[in-house]
Image (cartoon, rainbow, N blue to C red; front, side, top):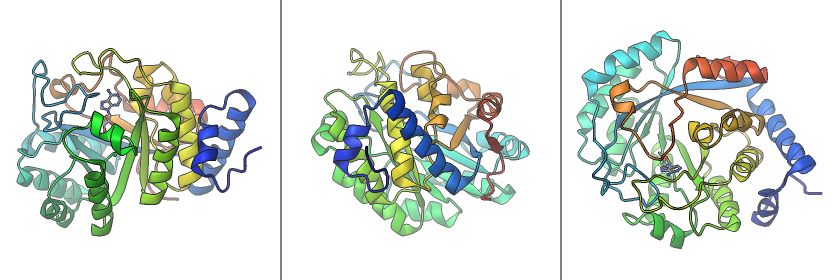
Length: 328
Ligand code: 5AD
């Protein structure tokens, strides 16, 4: 029987494929760890998808630069104001501003959004805009950004090169470390089920998250997109993805770990299972409809997490929905 206290890449590798009673034990340990650090709480945050322009050409992603079939859109400061106000009025105090890697997006607009959100009382503003210039990270911090999500997607440098031709794994990791050094809460994570990815790669991904000392960690099951080069590859395995959530929880202990809507898109009910595996964050989508419909990174009827859905999940699991996100 494996000792969950000091997991190595090899023991993680074995845990990735457990099922039946062993899986139940893994999930139970993950839930205990979650409850130890966060109590019986499900934290809520809201995402606004600011732009679906992207300078990258990631082979798995429908928002890739070379996808000419996608209509592109940007939301600017004035467009986001009513949404941020609405989020605040719902009692939510944590937002994510998400975008493709869109270097042409005016930084001043983004700074205005951050500063407005902080000004009306949003306590945490997390940016997810891909790799930016150091000076821009600093400017955003100055106007009140608190967190930055930059997923490495895979810890295997060769696989990285294959799936993300725009930059290198080393460059991305340098940026993640820089963000942490500057004072951001950092989030990162991987995709499970990429072509040519091995389970050992997935085990290394979790070790890398630990090494980076991330404050937030997430895993997405790969979902094919017909407007991407990986259109013919099959989707990631949901059971392994759920085991990854549980292992992340046990290894990273007090990290914020969402069960993301892609889980639900891949398989109905899978997002809920993510919370049984130790996830503790739910992200509701507050992007205005006209841009939300264009924010397509993968195929399938995209599942949009609403506040209602979040409430249902919390009720079903007997968790307390922590809308204001106060640490207890
Ligand atoms: N399948 C699963 N996740 C994807 N992402 C992008 N494309 C896909 C896909 N086809 C994820 C990446 C990215 C996040 C915004 O969405 O992890 O960081």
